[in-house]
Length: 241
Image 1 (tube, rainbow, N blue to C red):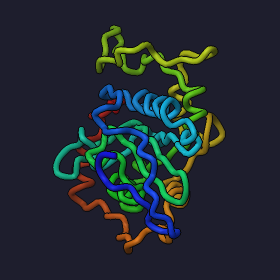
Image 2 (image 1 turned 120 degrees about the horizontal axis):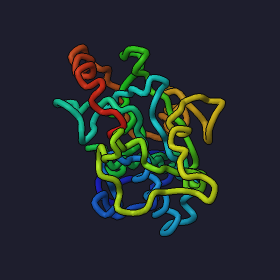
Image 3 (image 1 turned 90 degrees about the horizontal axis):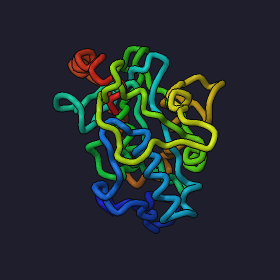
Image 4 (image 1 turned 90 degrees about the vertical axis):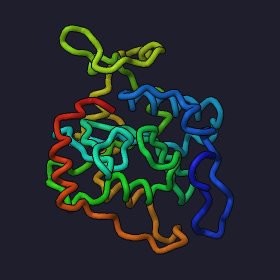
């Protein structure tokens, strides 16, 4: 597995996690189509590691204002690599008490332990304006494969031209639906598939201090200059994930 040596951090087990993907560059990837990139990751797990699909989760990251800051993004600005997306999508693999994150748009290793990824990518909501607090729609990978559909219209301008070139394969659809992307981005907990969570709830779901070998540092707080950089990024990355 490329990147970190993903091994157990506790519970008396040192068995490495199954490497779901050989390396980042072997994965199907189209810039600005994170929802489809993750669908393709799920498809590969189902094909090559079918028994592990039950341990995989898709997390949509957004909020009611569709303005979410993420750090350590390859498309990010300045030293902290900050981007404000309207939404982003990642894959979480958690077969036991451990969890790792696969994010094809992150400059962090592929995969990265959940704690490291979350603290460096999300940091802390308390240090951000409320309109930038992140929310998460968590969906099982199997449900995502069965139900997700996108006609890619969100990436077209009014004149029909592409904002970013689409993948070279056909749009993902189901027998009964050609587009439901917005239902995954929407953070209304009473609508759509899966469970809508706060950042704290996501941490509680995938992180336990008892399973980390070293004392984990608290999440870094965005500094004043980081918030200034965030404000400069606002409005730049509409649907560009």
